[in-house]
Image 1 (tube, rainbow, N blue to C red):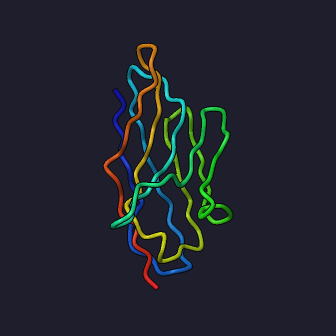
Image 2: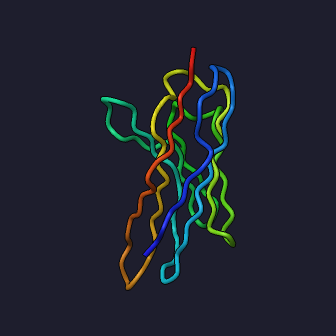
Image 3: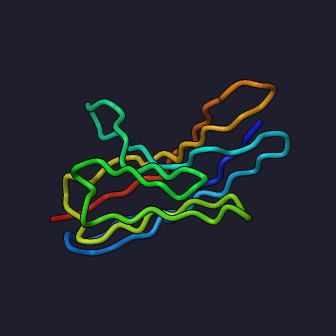
Length: 119
């Protein structure tokens, strides 16, 4: 099992910055991919940024140039630095982990942290 604890959300003005953190506790699993999704009110959950255990990153078009994902493999922590935030970035941001256990790949989700960007 993998347990995820997120932090770093909050209220910020447009143009501001936030950094999200997610710590994964993976006692019997090998984490492969970590990342962030978000879900705004009335919208579907969407991928924001992902990073593999080899450091390969993938960003949503809306995040490119403004957000940076990074990862501490030793500590199983993933970060999302968000700059030049816009009101449309307002959403619940959920930590995502894909980990191998028992020969299979399992997906885990954090409970989410609210990011609100005021105009």
